[in-house]
Length: 86
Image (cartoon, rainbow, N blue to C red; front, side, top):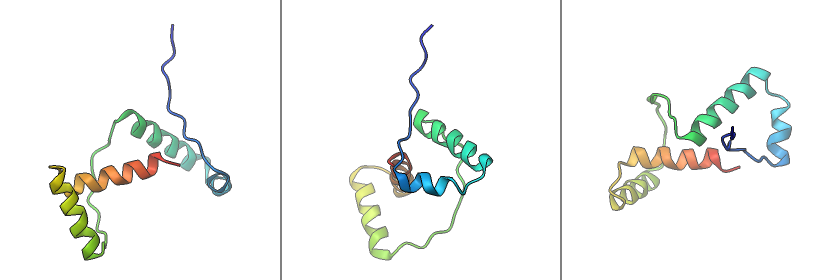
């Protein structure tokens, strides 16, 4: 029986140093969240409030329009890419 390929996150030394201060529960939760991200399984969304400079928001909205995409979906995509890239 073949095993599924699992996505492995490679970390530099700095996040590894930070990780030493985290609880085991936090590390396990992060690993679970990372595996969900890697497999494309998202949890329900949560509304948040964030302050973004107006020029940045206008740029995001323009880029989203050019891509025929909602700007909030574009922001989520950018954040997902950030989390997935060490």
